[in-house]
Length: 584
Ligand SMILES: [Zn+2]
Ligand SMILES: [Zn+2]
Image (cartoon, rainbow, N blue to C red; front, side):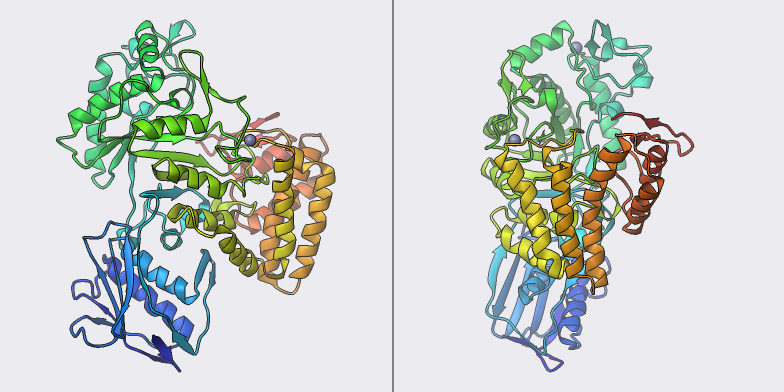
């Protein structure tokens, strides 16, 4: 079917009257996007018109509430093209058509748009929905660019996606929410019994080492009151997390220990509490789901009490190796202990949860968090792990990532692209997507960069090296000798694109990872102080708009720490407070 030839469009883009010129309409948004990109491809002036005469040839776009929010269809019929979908699906359908034509949305500022005098398509008849109902990641590029997040079909961004772009599935409280639901400062003097009994005392002293005593009968009422307030203030948010603080000091009082043992996991004690809250609030908030984190000590599934229909579980892969797929790694050194003394690794817990919970999400990880720029050899687990999640009936995925502005270094631009394809369809041809990305984004430098990425992945495979997200030792695949080999490849890569400023800059951005490893271990931690080298490194980081080198601090604090001969700037909420850690 011919869509345009010699700058003449085959017809208009037709939208229902209620969507025309309606800036809250997803149909209006994607119609504008199609007009813009089709004009860039063909230079033909496509017009957007109200759909009145269905006999005219054109692209007909309409939302359809019989479709799921993220579902879409594209059909060619009698010389016209029809795109239908749910509120996000209709947008995804429009972008899908552009991808069929040959467009690629690699990063917020790197799109591949073909130029064609004749634009013809073969017959299309497809209807698609994603493998996972919830898809999120917090790379800086996803967090900062709404249109790009939508092109990546992300529907759960923490800072929200505007309704015009399809909106997102939002959390009223995201994670580690005990502090919001039962404020420590409010109750610690009057009701020490509300807080965890740990190390021989109630944790009502001023520190971060507290959890709740989940068997205390008052806790349900306090959580119900605060959850109600928060849900009323956030009517668009449909998930509220009731989850422990980020520490391992859970209640060891007699009642809690007894309950944990009966349940076979401390999560059972938490489920009993959250089930009660969810039951009380259901009549007022029938479309809200209450979330719990299966995280560290709550990771093993309960053997007894199971989640209500309006309670969902987010299983966290935090102490998991990312050099090997979940089901292939043989390292049990970081297995989680159960009350009966047994242990489990992530894949064991995933399988157990999949048997008892029908609304299971996974909180997955894709970076080293204390050392964001570290080359993270996880390329070969991206697809198998998402396939495993899909196999065990996981419904949603959050990829916690490098949230630095511009997505950080270490080829994260490509990770974002591949993860977005895999979250939509874990069985997609990821090698083909990677090849397309590498060849366009890095041009002639691609073969050398591929060789470098394969070297680090071959190493972890051959040496059975395990890779964790919080580890701070120098990985075995980043010795000085190997860095020398990687640097030769980066030299060749830079040479290959020396006449292409944009691609050269992308290669240099990727190379910041290798420079980080060299400066961090050979200079900073070794006491070798080279101000010129440090200054140049930070100048280049700023030039690439990289805002952080770790999860907690910004680069200006890290810069000051390095200049003071310390390893890392410490995060403080006050901009006037500064400190540095001498060792990691
Ligand atoms: Zn207790
Ligand atoms: Zn491993």
